[in-house]
Length: 119
Image 1: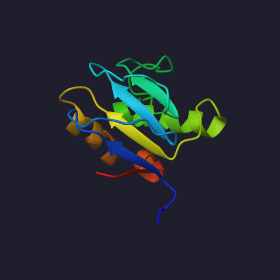
Image 2 (image 1 turned 45 degrees about the vertical axis):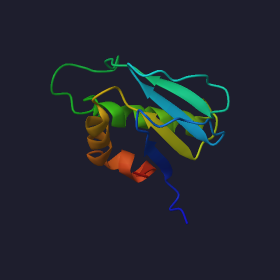
Image 3 (image 1 turned 90 degrees about the vertical axis):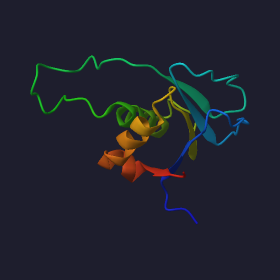
């Protein structure tokens, strides 16, 4: 039984990944995604800043916490058809960033409302 949220699964670096048509693959810097064929899509997560930020203290434009912000963008693209529809997200975080990326999801109300951590 599902609660309607998108399943988010962090994949250990030593586990082989088989592409799944219902799954979006999110790959952090320093990880090799492999071929995109067979996935609903592949997103390469790269460090960057938002072009929409104003000066310090502007509450409307403070960036959401890194990975949670990326998940928000992914969710929007899924809803508007910019990404193929998917029900799962496989996450390959950058080396050493697994805990930080999980914390980003845990600390973000919108990410928790849209995504369900599998592991």
